[in-house]
Image (cartoon, rainbow, N blue to C red):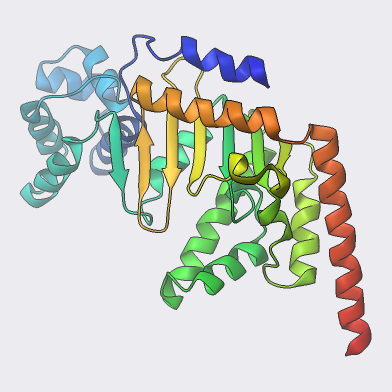
Length: 295
């Protein structure tokens, strides 16, 4: 664990200036080319008078294309002026080291976590999104009453699709720092909590419980994530009800890393954490049994 955290300091500068958002928008360019034309990358490069490597680098978000490049590329793909203008507006932020999105913009988040080599998460109030059951997620959204009812179904479906990441053979190494408050918070009732806590015991990830007794030292009010990539810069991420923040600035990443180092120093061990989760799941099962006996 500590080895993985300390590795992050050596990955700040690696020659790849891409960001999660530049890779997202680059992939959107690739999808546009494939959807609206029959051109392969080499073909459109020849038509534009570019080196084939330029198309590849732009579509992988590795280099910043000029606005003229974008206009020419999307023009060759037959896209409208309105589409091109909208894309250019978004593309101007593609390589920002601090990038903010609305919480319902989920593509950049999904692409970042699915391509990570390892990741670390922390949440004070709820269990890790990558481990949540549909029933738990549904109850969280309904209890928060932030999303309108017609958007809750889509949000639950998206989070459920994200959990398949843990079942991939090439899944990232995941370490979930979970505050005791999140484990004890009754979301959806005893049956939902029992199922959710049992899901946490899957061996595809590491669990580190931050005890409530650790006081303010274990309390951070945002949800934090560190994504570590094999050949790209580490990215820090924070999420709230109103925004998603992606940080690739070395100073910001270093500050987020310090949070996880602090959590690592005060959290229960993996063995202790799993024992605590198993005990709480057993208690939820007993509470569910008592409910059934009263009906």
